[in-house]
Length: 299
Image (cartoon, rainbow, N blue to C red; front, side):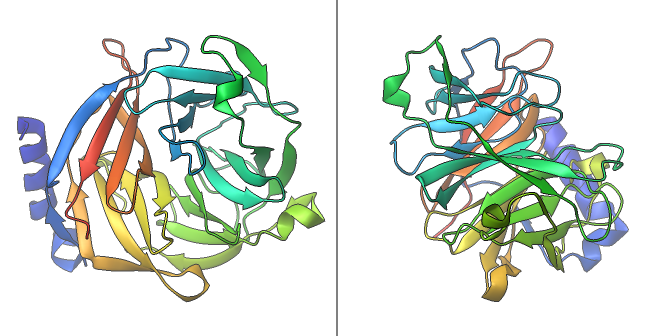
């Protein structure tokens, strides 16, 4: 275990909030670096979503100010295809997920980043999941035109870097935790039919104590393929929840899988199956973004 991780664990144990936490802190049962992103244009990977229809395909994107592109890579970071999302712009892309949709399977991209928490509304883009086999690595391929949905939170702006979609197509937003705690919102799938602007409903406040000094701001979230668990990741840990009625989340045996700051800037998380997770990271000035396989004793 790295020295920095040991120091962060000590900081967790010493903070006054630790005694009130519902979480049992434990290191991973397995963590292995699988590779780095080989495409040098993919330097700010802020999210990850494993395809359920194309085996071995991981979707990711660059964050704010970059081109409106989504990238297909394998679990070792090799480029499989790059796609321009037609009709979209990248103001502050931070997250993406895979969702059922009229086309079958769609990518939903969250232009939901808002560091100063001032944006009156944010944007979701939805496109049918591109077929990677139809694209050659290194060739920029257009997607179908994107559906666009403007989103306004019921209690004012939030910085959100984590969305996930359940089997009905409802989209959930998890706030980063900058100012109002870590909050969960739900947007029903029917919002896409209405179009225009949409207001997600507040579901709950999640029992994760935001603390950037130990890397505890939310940077991504993902729902397991069987729909039973949600993994909420921060820069230094993954918190596991079970999914209840109306999408409410309950700590899954209080498991906080704490791995420390082993990545250049860890941001993305996705489930490879119902037990194993993939973590992705932005690049640093000295290294490319990384991909890690993470196991945390999941049944």
